[in-house]
Length: 182
Image 1 (cartoon, rainbow, N blue to C red):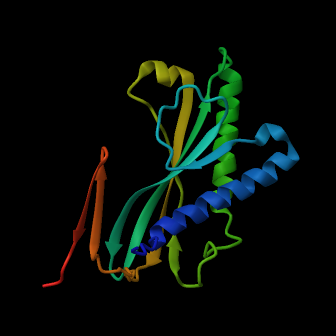
Image 2 (cartoon, rainbow, N blue to C red; image 1 turned 135 degrees about the horizontal axis):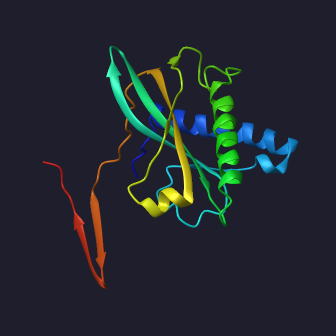
């Protein structure tokens, strides 16, 4: 079986999500009201959320000289429950600040990677998010933090095993193909 290593930009997203979770866990020790869910690459639907959610994802990755710059987004979502707009708005702005504090924490500037792997972490930008669905905009407060991370690019070596046999099984019909090298 082939070994498919994960790219550094993918591992950086894991590290950023872990950083947010670490801060969330510390915040909820102060008061459980500061708790929220943290996900990675969660897709919608956003309807039916029972509590605040932060969803991390990678938005882009582009070359810049001999390095790459990846842009990450952290969607902050707070559902409005039972006409509690003021309470949901207060929680939304608290969540916004909690995530900002976590992402700006420079206690580990290399995010656990070897020093020099990450050459720069850019400044944060915030933007409110409006959905195409008016009803969803009434039910959810949403905004997104964006962050750029520039990292050293080193191509990954894909360790592949030669394919010699292919087994196919479809609806009870099976076939085995033996492949020969030219």
